[in-house]
Image 1 (spheres, rainbow, N blue to C red):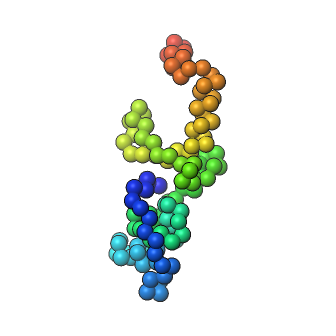
Image 2 (cartoon, rainbow, N blue to C red):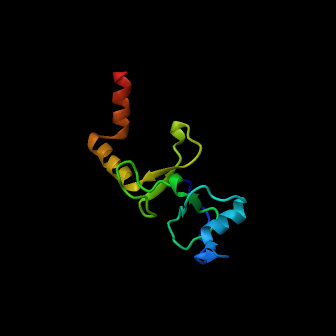
Image 3 (spheres, helix red, strand yellow):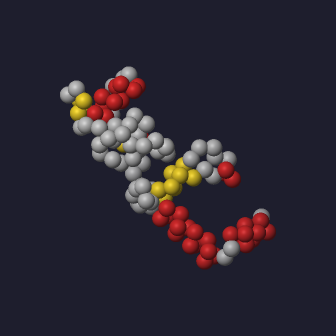
Length: 118
């Protein structure tokens, strides 16, 4: 999945006797989609071509089973790990890991302890 940087474009359910999503895909990319289409924004009436994606390419839940919703999702670029593009992160999992780090002590203490052990 990629971050949504453009606003939604509500549209009709059908265009010219076809699904509005398929018609938009054909107009934008010039070829028939090779599977069902969904929207990254999750809105049923959105036909913005930047929001369209094949359903098999869409991730709907994190590894712990929390749904990726607008309120529960954040995009993060981990420059410390050499990443250059944003990755999807579950806010619930992030909050839980933040509390585990606090309970274990200061993050700097954990890093220093690991450095001494190595």
